Length: 206
Image 1 (cartoon, rainbow, N blue to C red):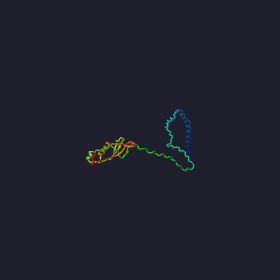
Image 2: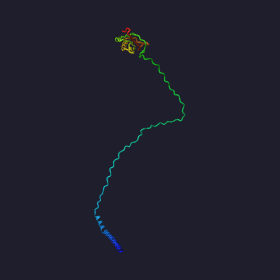
Image 3: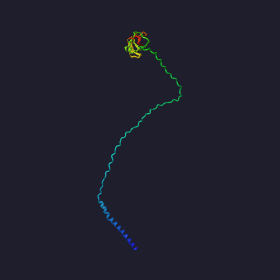
Image 4: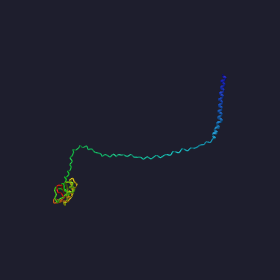
């Protein structure tokens, strides 16, 4: 038993010694050959150019807007408040307007309304034959303006008889008549008068 353990130890020691011897041999022979082989290999060096810088894009121009006030506040005037005691109210005197002048006399060109008028040639109404057959009758009142020469310058129907033929016949009769001019203060002036013309079948109208 002791002999087997001793033999085993000798084997292990011999193996360790062989490993050391192989390592020394390799260090003395193999390592210098490797250094020489590496020294004979040419060394290639390639210079790499640095990357080009990325182009810079110009920044968009931004317009600078100055803010403006939309509403301009007016400058308020400075008001001085007096410290004096309020005075008693004073009466205000308003000048009176002078009275209007007296009304002028009426315009003489305006016709003056009169109640009667003098005839130079009285109106002679003619009874329309058609009105006789139809038994038409009635009273026509005419509004007549007589000028300074005594002629009827305007004839209007104030009150109708109810029959157009009778109204027209009355107007024609006054138009053929002649009047004496109306005189006021020694001078003739226009006059307005109401003239009635009656159409009656029991009267002998022309």
